[in-house]
Length: 291
Image (cartoon, rainbow, N blue to C red; front, side, top):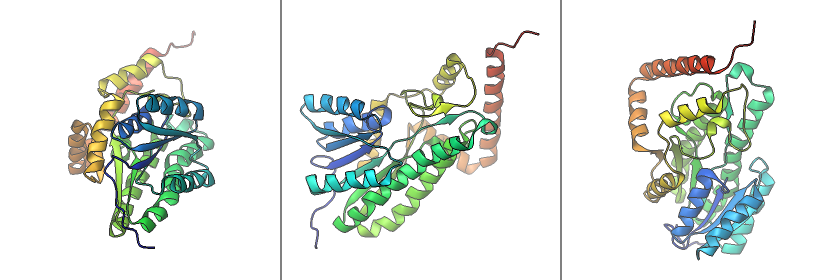
């Protein structure tokens, strides 16, 4: 079959957003719908995804919700096939669902490693495997994978998360080269801190492997000057529309990434200083047991 259609910028496009019920995923879904896309919010929290989709529809836009576990490949494959049958095309898939496991790696259980790998890496692989062959057949499409600054820098205390996000960056940039001749675009989002439910808490389905007081987590987050999810989504979609490969937001973190690439040794030194400061702050905040 010869396809004559092409990727729609956003107006009239069809998009799937995993992890679309909250945080960055919700902001991306709302921004896509505002631009005229028909959006499917796929999330393990199916009821919450439907609430968000209903609000989008109340504003005169098009959205549907789907309960989805990204670690279940048959489920995401069925979703992609159903969207194709219903809409006749798939312009975008945002593989966004993710979790964090916070704490020193020496405290991890094997299941912690498996869980973060399953959601953050296999979840992206499943989205790619379901959507990419379809996009190759239709000769257009854009795969947008959510990584993190932790995919570009070393992030102690988020070692498993860091490993998966580095993998997502590598997957995305390598696939981008393969996909281009077929007319398929691939981008990777690397957000800095965003003011959502704190990733340092692991998110809804992650966890902390050591007790860290909420005020300590909040102070660390605020030091990094998080941006609002809506701000991130607006900037991200502008970069996606320009087919940027690695999308680092906000810009100050892009400068930090450039400096790290120029001097990895300096980056590791600063990371070690940051870790030492965190441990010192934690020791002062956790009451010592009575003698």
